[in-house]
Image (cartoon, rainbow, N blue to C red; front, side, top):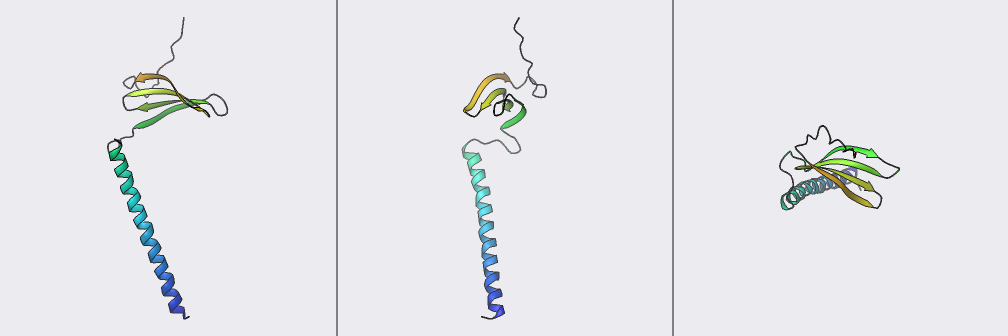
Length: 104
């Protein structure tokens, strides 16, 4: 085999790989847009879930404060699952999370 034959074969493989990777990228982008559209995804530029704060309670347990569209949620996260602990309306400023109520 000559040098030019090997070089042309290598070039053909590189071009084919570039085409396959380009098609995969385009198809994944289209799939993501379709999935967002079908499943009621967020509008352009809007994030449906916004992380606010977290507080670790142990090695694998924590509480997480998140905002989901029109409400703020406090959820407990453990290795066994996720539990909703409390909710507040989103108009109760997400920048300052709700203060805990003190029982008297």
